Length: 422
Image (cartoon, rainbow, N blue to C red; front, side):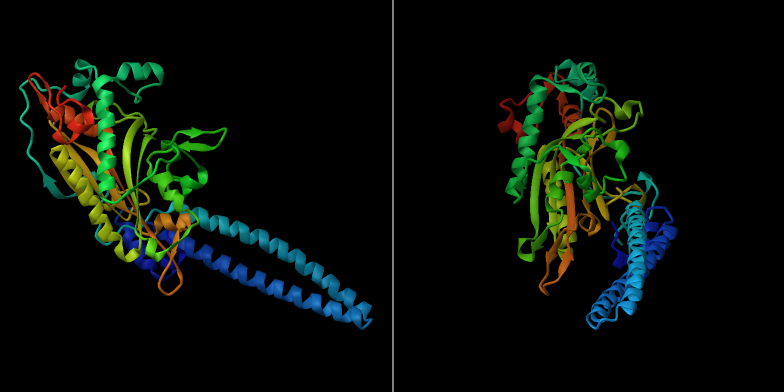
């Protein structure tokens, strides 16, 4: 959530930065300013009303002490009217506060100055590319055929048990999943991250805290009786550890990593781009999260990007990094880098990671602050990244490492697998 101070003091800058998303949010920003001014005016009247009520109470007490009951009764009647007016103003103030908060929830984060203006993925910038295109057999197969041929993933069984988008990993397919999870976690621990195993269901306050709610209700599985949500990423529970927390400056940056299953109700598009492991409703992911001082967050973002680079190079997968344009970024992001792995058999790029800086957008919702050198509470910056999401990594490994007589596997996974080839 954008801060009111930023909206008040940098109004045109915020409008211009939001325009990078390919949308005009000037009317929303002006409405926030109007509601804020009305709320502040109402708050001033309320305080004046309370001060007048307190003054009357003292005067009434003095009048009774001096036996001036008639005048005391007049002032008592005036006091009753003021208290009734106070209750009305309290209700009006609460309604204004709700309207203001609801309007702020509707407005996405203002993109960083480094973000290019754009409306869609066509406007994204490729900022880095690594690796050679794999040399594949003449009859190279897409991963959904390989998983069937080698009994690695059973999509039909998952459809029977749950529905489309919930695959069953079997045999060496299940072991490959486990190997990747452990490899990603171990690499994060080597990089100084602290491991967390969070719940995979969160309450509404947690969804609001990281910006999934009220923006993405339609993409989240919702247990309505308990009003709990299946997490779309470990970012949500891990970042919410710091909701309503005031940190010490010396504690920053905080580096956490967690593995979780993730759940997304992605609406039904069909075709090769969503076949097999390309798009799932349930998938596994290792997530890195950092809580940082504002003056360090962009340096930390580059550090996180380098960490994901290291994973991709160790896996030996051809990949590229895109800096997303304003129109293709997530609702809460100020700047996002996407990693895409090359899928040899499909001849296309597959997104495998998003690494983002949210600046104070999440922290403002979370009320996550740190006490700075001046002893004042200041909002932190929050960052996270997929390191990595498994389905399309598995798809890329299977397709890019296939040979005439099987599938070779990346050397970095051999200690975790107990075998080197499928």
